[in-house]
Length: 528
Image (cartoon, rainbow, N blue to C red; front, side, top):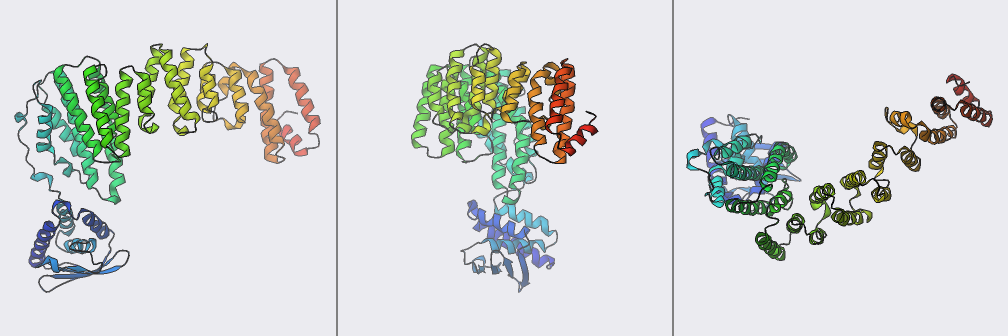
C-alpha cells in the first residue's frame, strides 16, 4: 500500500523526529531491535492511515495488539500491550508505514539505524592524516584518543559487511609510514587492537537474526589481523624494551583490559592478547611488581568470571615467562583450564627443546593430574602431542608412553601414530587388539605400511577377526571371514610359512565343516 507522497513524507519526518527524541541515548534500543524483527517477520497484519496524523494497525506478537500512532502528539500513541511511551509494536507499525512510502525499504532501514543512534558513514569527515605524526615522543594514550575521535564511528559502516574496517586499518597504519621501525611495530599493534574493538562494537549493534552470520564473518576477517598482531608482539619480545616501548605496552594493556571488561563473552579473545602483551614485561622486576599489585587489586574488586580468569591468567603469564613455574602453576589452578591451556603448551614444549626436564616434569604432572580427574578430556590432544614430543626426545624414558596408556581410550589415535612412526609395531598391534579393532575398521591403506614392515604382528588380529566373523552365523560374516583368510594366506606366504598356513586352513575346514555357507564362501574366494 502506498500513501500520498507529500503528506506521507511529512508524517514520516514528524514521526522520525518524535521517535528519535524518545530514543535518545539508547533508551529504547532493545525495543527498536525487537520492532525491526517484527517488521521483518511481517507481523504487521493491518495498517490504516487516516485523518492527517493518525495511523492504526494490528501487530501479531505472542498475542494480537492494536496500535495507534499520533504523529502530531506522539505521547498520545498507544498499544494494547500497555508499555509506556515506545513499545516494539508501535515501532513495527512505524516501520511498516515507512515501507508504504516511495523508496520505502530504504526509508525504513534509515529510520531503524537512526533510532539506534547510528548515523550514515558518509556524514563523517576525517581530518587530514598530516595531523597525526607518530614518533618516539608520541603519547600512546593521546594517540588512542585521536583514533577514537577520528575513527570511532567507523563501526557504523559495518551494517552489511566488515570489509570497511580493512580500509580503516590501512588508514590508521598509514599514519606511521614514515616512523622508525620500532615505532611502526607498536603503532600497528595499536591500530589492529583498535579495529578489533570497532568490529566488536559493530557486532553489538547487529540484530539477533543475523548476529551469528556477522560473528562468523568478523572472525574470518579478524583472523589474519590477530595472527599479524601476535607476530609483531613476538618480534618486539625478542629484544629488551626501551623506555618509549614500555609506555606503549602499558597503554596497549590498559586498552585491551578495557575492551575485555565491556563484555562477559567477547568475540575476540582479549584474554590471550592480554597474556601475550604482559609477557613482554616478564623479567623486568619493577614492572612485574607493579602489575602484580595492580592485578591483585583488580581481583579484589572484580566479580565477573571472565575477567577473574583473565587476571589470574595474566598473573600466571608474568610468572611463567619470568621462569617462576611453581608460582605460575598456583595462579593457573585458580583459572578455568580451557581459558589458559593455550598459554601452557608452547611454554612446556620450549622447555623440552631446552632440555629443562625438571620444569617439564613439573608442568606435565600438573596437566596429567588435571586430565586424570576426568576434566576436559576432549581437549587432551595438545597434551598427548607433548607426550609424543617428550618420548621422541627421551626415547629411553618409558614414562611418556605410560602416560598415554593411562589416558586410553582418549589417547588411542596419538598412541597408535606414535608407535607406527617409531617402528614399535608389536606395541601397535597389541594396542589394536586391546581396543578391539578389526582389519575392516581401518581406512584405505592404513594397514599396508604395517603389513609391509612387520607382517607377523598383524597375524593375531586377522585370526581374531576370522573367528569373530564366523560367529556372526550369517552369509555376510562368512564372506568377511573368507576375505580375511585370503589375506592371511598372503601374509604367511610373505613370511615363508606356507606349511603353517596349510595346517591352519585344514584345521578351519575341519572345525567348521558343518557350515555349508562358509565352505561355499571359501570356494568362491579360491581358497579351496
